Image (cartoon, helix red, strand yellow):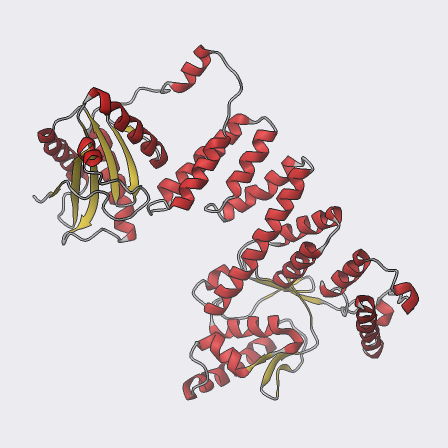
Length: 481
């Protein structure tokens, strides 16, 4: 039944090609029904891929209009760059892109109005749209495109018109990606997946991040890229083609640093016995996840971090070599800074130690607020003052203390072997050093402090990963000059 349907479809395509006088440019042999039934799925997929990739219908010697929308926006007609005298994010450019992508099928007027204005068909949008169409026709007439009747309207459907052979990188990627995911032959599938991953050169129309229609398409293309990349890397790893998988993931990590591609990188590097490079990937991922995001890390991110941590293993060595690797490379004054996951582990170890030693240990949370006590959130100010507070905390504490950045506006400090009354003095030193960089009153530092023993005895558990305050009871203070 499948082959009967395919034969009927292909016969229809052949008839249409004959009518359009494009047969001379193709070398296509149609088998009779008896032979067609013996054609494998692989051949059919190749043929369908050949048709859908848009290579047919382009007459010999006729220039092709190429549009690149992934990663950047650019056009060329034949060998010449194509430009319109308008901004890349303007409404007239958006209309051109929408019609270009719609192809011969076109788009209904109501769909265009919704995409361009977001509020459907009103008198105002209809008037604006009419002017937009006029402007686009005028702009196209002033380009290198051949003279033709552009923007045709029939029964409420708008088409770009003209007689252009159009190739769009986003369409080519989507067709190649979907075709590759359907292929059952692993070798051929790997080849197609590799090609699809390289066709994806970046996010769809990144300059139009605020446009809803572009944002929806951007998400769809990204998800297809992720699916192709995961399957391609899996097939490459099965064949021990680790270098090729690394090349694919290197670009993915640059474009999408907060996804799981570092895990695949670590897998491949460990398989190649490149332990130091695997450790570098691990440390870079830790820095990105817990220092550059500006938010408290989620449980999902923590699990990713621990998954990478669990995969790092070192080659066998003697105690002296191991000891050298554990020691700090350079002497530094002030408290010891570590990543948030390392802080969690240290906190839990210290909490166990004081069960027997009875040593006094306090946990302090320093938070940046505005003059009214609200969390500081202004990006420009927050980034600078967060760095100032981090430096103040590090330089105001002893070498035996520990601190980490919990979020862009909060730092956690572990004060070991200190008395309750000394916490105020410690806080005073932090604020005094902070005020040297930020003398005004627009930014305040609020702090909470609580004994680890009290936290454990009261069973007021610390909830790591939450953006809310971490404990029920403690001391808080706001510094004001």
